[in-house]
Length: 162
Image (cartoon, rainbow, N blue to C red):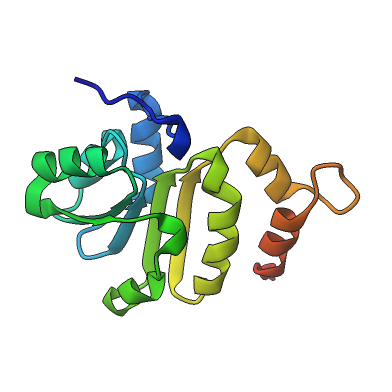
């Protein structure tokens, strides 16, 4: 039985197998990497990632989904049951650069992206599915109606390549 998306967590589960395969192709996970999935939910992305790596770390806030994930994947999934907005990502950095992936709920996208700036020296890359409005705010230029805190923070943390 498929879980019901909970509104309070802003859950929207990935279901399109083509999209999931495309995401995993871009991430291109390799065994031994410090890969962390944020919000594995119904495990659509998790299962495909675990087809390519022997173990995966994930952070899930929903205790019912966490129980299902533990039952389904056992020791192959190192699951932290927590609110990702309170997680200290530095605790994982000793195992190599962090590679983050996830289908982020709209209500935590901006606070999480801003929070992850504090860990930029420990994060190799981030691959997130975001709502169109969040992406528009990230890429907005000064003077554009969508420009604000998120676009400003994201720009400040990147260095153009020369």
